[in-house]
Image (cartoon, rainbow, N blue to C red; front, top):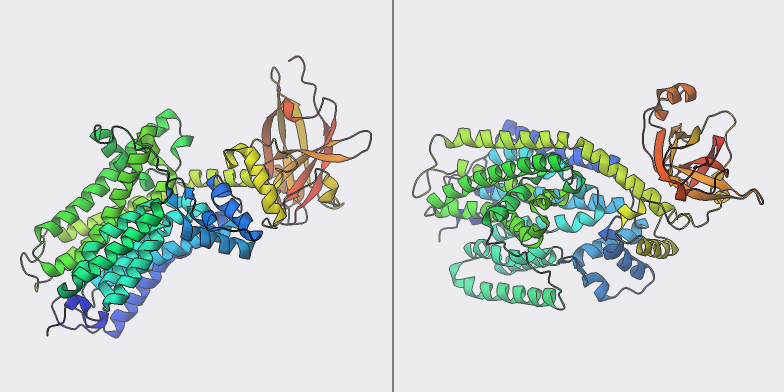
Length: 617
């Protein structure tokens, strides 16, 4: 009986039916390519390490914070793990979140590294799938590993890399690639089905679009199961899909679909293209754009989305034209499905969000879902490149195809590298926002009117209540500041080092105060303070209470570098405007303090100031 080429071990497969042995120098070159492919992963790890901020944000408070409180207090229920988060049931991500939270006192940076781990697993499975779908001994899986990983680990998806909650968006990706790999590589039918069912179940209860995997994986599964066993395998698969669907939709609260999705095909297509091109719209979230910037970013995203969709379509068309070539069809189908999943996800997003406007397709969280399309296109072009003379039907695409493939890979890779560079201002902006959020959370129990808290959670009062419960369960390290008395965290002012100066100025004709100055941490090599605390002095008791928190602003101050004799102090300047209602009465004596989060301590700046007279209201 003849053994299928696809079911041979990797070392025995070849495009033309002959075994190909790697020469030592070829093996060394492939190892170098693998090392080069690991560089984007290491850069992404460095990016997360240097930019991550430990602070819950937005949906994270309720979707993760509430189960975390119940887990820490021994009151965790099944409902805590399965309740809806928007359109999704994130059962498996919540297990990861709670496990990491219990081990790290809910350090959200651990979730960001977990996200990176799932991206790495996806990259690994896709590389192994490339080796499975290309001839043994081929250089292409190794050559394509580098551009594919540049895309998969691109910092254009910074919003997901720097928000731990978004792990649930990335978790299904290795489930899909792993299921495709298992369908092709595992020879035992029971083991093949078990692995694919397990991975698809995880995807279903991580992201709503994971439900579609039960349908999309059927062709690859059936193609890699002997014809005599397909019927029973299909029944098992459909039974598992039915059980998952029943569990998913039990008590499900569906969001109303967008009206006019099909009656306005141009708007829908524009949204889909904007979604698919969102990683290349040069960073930022559409909420932060001015009208003109939004139009420009949307035009770029739609252009790149249309280009990526067209290139994927060209590759799929080449497969369709050679559909009678069974070997090519079997090798190409996993990549067609992987790319189609991205297009389908864009369509599902349009069905739920198009009523918010086409601009909503620029939401920065969509970048990770869109990246899979060009990655699938690159690997699919590699499969077509390796079409062999042993195939039936047309041998290979025309002479234009190989230069076309090289150009496509080069252009897509260059576009992503450029987009990552152009996203730098947006990355700085999101890091600054997270630092503001962190300061707001750290002092929310003693200064609940901090403006930044409005950006951290849509209901500041609920955030404060949850923060108090999380703090009581020791899920914040360092613990939140619970007393307005500055003495609780004050450290002595050094006599041999400057800490900083500040001033309060009433802006003429307004009820606004301008706060400015600089602050460093004298016990930490004069690095900029994590925040500046303003305290009011009670003239009767002399007690000082925290009343205002100024987040870091990072204004360059060369004069401070000279005064402190420390280059670390360069970005120690701060400026902030607050309404008069945030301050105590005019004439009140105030001090400012340089706050350090790591030690939960504060050191007084070198001067005092008096609340200015606001004049006539």
